[in-house]
Length: 429
Image (cartoon, rainbow, N blue to C red; front, side, top):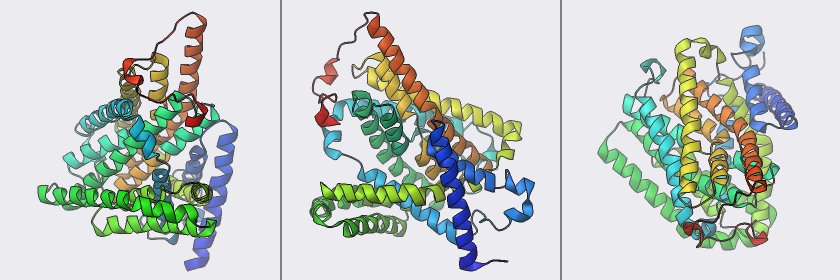
């Protein structure tokens, strides 16, 4: 029987190989790679292999067992979050502030409120051992309001919309929402570990403010260093910034992923060749570490739990709230900014993708004891379902817009757009 490092290497080879294989298969069928990578974990976990061949499944890592591969998966989480933050274009966010505030506020606050309200209705049996009703409700609100920038970016690129106004506003709004969501997650995590103590929560807010202030102050220096260094030093320095941010957050009693996001903001100051080197690091992380994390996340999934009518009903209800909240929020925010109706619907459809970010939030909730394994499975399934919905909804929105234009329907630009850059220009791609 293998143990120690040989067992870890076997686990890593099997999990990574199956995750990449099924991820490529999913892409071939026009689906996000995360669907296949998660499926790898489901096949190797208690839902399939654990039922068909318990003996063979015994050598796979168990959630919470402290296995070495768990550490690799956690590293993948931190680097994915940090590199997503590094993609933020703060200058563009400032230039489109008015429209982005409206879209982001509606697309975030509506599902946040719906999720929090659902937290008071969901049966107590679906609450984790460490979560009281208030913390659980706040967590569900955060889980339903997040957006997955990597999935949105890939979907928009595949559809040729990355340079369109819809693509640019969707990406920028998603980035704003994720930044706020990580802060909210830090506050909820602090409440779960120390209780709803006004003093402790106040210190959490102070530490968060200090962390992001330091990140912004370090950006000019980091920009000079990362934009002039060679490839290997740039990649290493960026990884150090992200991991150091995670360590600082942990020492401050915050979620490490929040610190990784702050570290990624610093690394995102790179320009020119430095940004190209960051793309190389991102490719390596997405190709190796992200599949390991997603497959390991799939190992936590127990689809048998959905056979319980209570769990199935909760899953259906939360999925409806998640999708309806994002679609309606994005649509209302865009329409109040003077954006045509089908483009507004497309923005809501794009923001509805939750993908990898939702799974990271679910993993944090399970680790903190806010979620049960059944509730964790519900949140992960919402992540997969909303990621699958994005491409067909975006295609339908633009097909309808084309139909309207053929029939003489024209939508003028609203007053609120006049101060915005023309995102159709090549310079804004």
